[in-house]
Structure formats: C-alpha cells, structure tokens
Length: 210
Image (cartoon, rainbow, N blue to C red; front, side):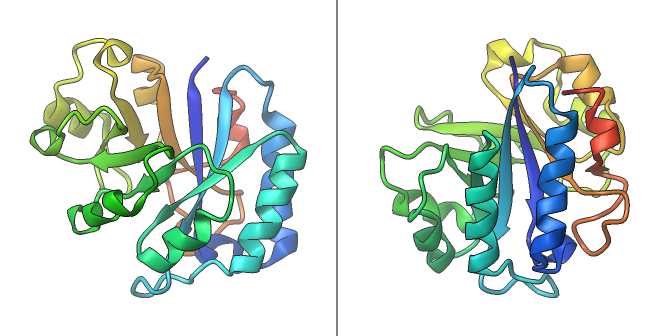
C-alpha cells in the first residue's frame, strides 16, 4: 500500500466555495477503492503573490467532512501563522514546499509531529530522521526525464526512503517507480486557476491509481 497525498491547492481552485470543495472530496471518494492510503493536503498561507488564500472556515469544514469519509487531512504551510492554525488539528504530518527559505519552519513544528519536505536537489537533503524527503521538480508540468536526470532514479525508491512529489502530466512516473509515498496535484475537470493545469490529477485519472 502506497501513501497518496493529493494536493487540493489553496483557494485558487475551490474559490473558497464549500459546494465545490465538497464535490472535490465526493468525486475523489467515488473512485477510491481503498487500495492505497489517501491523504488530502491543502496549502495554507496568509499571502503568496496572486494566489488566493484558503479561508480557515473552508479548511475546517473540509477537514471535518473528509474525516467523516475516512480521510486524514493536512496542509503545506508557508508562514508561522498558518502553521499555528494547522496545529490546532490532528494531522498526519506537516508539509513544507520546495522552498529553502521555509526551512526555518521545521524548528517551529512540535517534535511529535512528522514533517514532509520537498527537495529539487539531492545535495540539499540532510537525511534527518524526523523528516520525510520528497523528490520534486518544480516545473508545471515537469517531465519524467527531468526527475530521472536530476535524481538518477535507477534505484528502488522504496529502499531509498524517498517519496516523490509528482508534477508530470501523466502517470509514467508513478507506473515506472511505484513510490511508497507520492504527492500529486488534484482537481476536477472544470477546475481553473493557478493550481489547475496538465499536472493536475482528475478523478478519472486517479481511477487508474486508486
């Protein structure tokens, strides 16, 4: 069983519309057979360029509804305020994006809470025992060749202990390496905004994985 982390984005895709958020979760549930552990992950920040922040009340409603359907929920955090908000909930881990200027947040996370961090350079990984590293190419979309060139993915991903943050436009990376932990962007066929694009997995695409 792999752990599939589905990035629901920020307020960009859902527009902080609860009906749309519920439909995102419902359509995921409709294709999920339980073969893998699926974790819902959002993005929380106070401000990030042209991105639309996810409203706290939407996150809380989504967290409760997902829990009712058997899903754990967490988030990437981009500032201390968002981290403090997220820590009010029971989460499986805290996620930090592929931005080294956010590494200071690691020291703000309680020791009992696992941390997942994306890296785009193998040299940046410090192999810390309390951090799960995800190999990431921050192009949208990225190519399978990009991952294989940067990370030399000829070894067994599971034995290496790394996960993959998959930004490709197809399932080739997943099908070839079957990582024990795989993060993918998620949305619906009519999703728009900065979190949507060919790198996004729709329920129809996820049917092949789940």
